Length: 477
Image 1: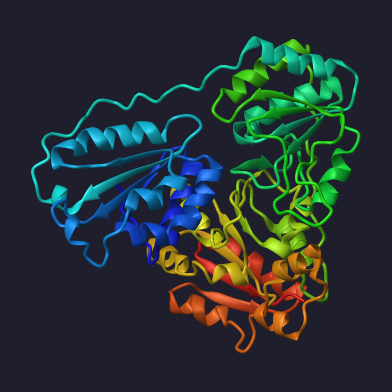
Image 2: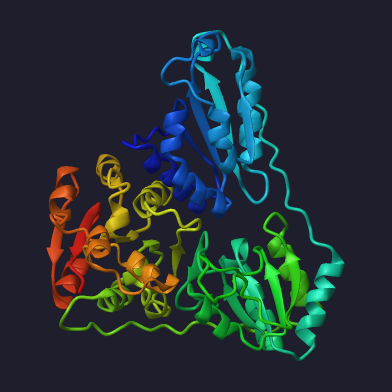
C-alpha cells in the first residue's frame, strides 16, 4: 500500500478520483471524523458523478465516547450518504476484516461507486482477528437485453436523423471503435456528454462531438434529430436553468432509446449493435493528425489551446478545469497525438489540481497537464505540495484572468445584465492580484509567469521536456 499525504481533504478525495479514473481500481481515502469528510465532499460529489470506485475510511469517536457529544461529534453517515452508494458503521473491531472486504467489493460494483467505512477509534486498539485474504469477487456488468439492441438497430436503420449519446466505457478506445463502425454504416452522429469521466481522443482515434455547455448551442446541434440512442448515460439536460430556456435538450418529436445504462455492459452492447446493423467490416472515420501553428501576440485562451495542440506529447493526460478561458481547447486539440481528457464531472470546482495529482500517481510514465482556472485553483492549491513531495510529473497551466469570469457570464445569462461595480468587485480576484509563482514556489514547485503567446509557447515547451511538477502562470487577456 502506498500512502500519500494531502494537506486538505478536498485534495485527498479529488486525487482518489483521478487515480480511479486512470487505474480502474479504487483508491482509499483516510479522513478524520465528520468534519474531515465534509471538507472532502465537493470532490466526492464529482467522483460520484464520474461513477468511479473509491473507498472512504472515516475515523470516528470511540463507540463508548459518542454519547458524551464531544466537540467533533457528528452524524458521519448523514454526511456520507449523498455521495456514497454503500455505507457501513463498524461497531466492533472484530467486524473490520469483513467490513473492509465488503467495502472493496461494493466500490467495484458496476460501474463503480463510493463505499464509506466508518471506523470508531476503539477499533484501532482492540483486537480485530485475522484479515480476509480471499480474492475480491468483482460483480460483472449486466448484459443488455436483445430487445434493447434491436430497438436501437431499428432506429439506426430507419433512415431518419439519429445520434448516439456516449459516456463511460463507450468513450474509451474500444467503445469508440465500435460506435464509429455503427456511425460509418448508418450515417448516425456520435456525441458525448459535456463533462465526461475519461475521453480517449486525438489523431487516429474515432472522433466524437462534445455536447455544448450552453442550452441554445446544444439544442442547435441536436435540432432535427429523430432518434437519440443513449449509451452509458442519460438524456441530456442543462447544467443550469435559464429564463426562457428548456431544461431538457431532447428535440421535439425525438424518440429516446436506451441501449445501455451506466451499470450495464456497454462494450458488449456496442458489439452486438455492430452485428445488428451489419457494421462488422466497416472501417470507422478517424481523426486526422494536425499540429497547430503557434500564434503571436496577446496571450488568451485560444493561444494557450494552440500551443497545447502543437506541443502535447503522445499519451498525455489532460485534467481540465480551464472553465471560461478553455472553451476553444477541445476543438483546437482534436488532431493532437493520442491522449486522455478528464473533465469536472459534477461541476464542483476545485477538482483540477487534485485530479491531476491522483492521475500522476496512477500513471507515472505519462505526462499530466492540468488546465486550471485561477479562481477554482485557490480551492485546492495544496495539491502542489503533494505533487512536489511525491515528485509527480504534472505541468499546471494557470489561466490567470484574475476574476471569476464564468460567474460574470452566468450573471448575464440569467437576465441580470452586465454586473455593476459592486458585483464586479465580488467577482474580481484583484486587490491584491494572486501571485502564482510565489504560491507554487512556496510549496516546492518551480513556476514562471508569462504575458505573451510567444513566451507561453517557449515556457510550455521547456516544461514539457523536463519532469514535473512545474507551473506556468499565464496572464490571459
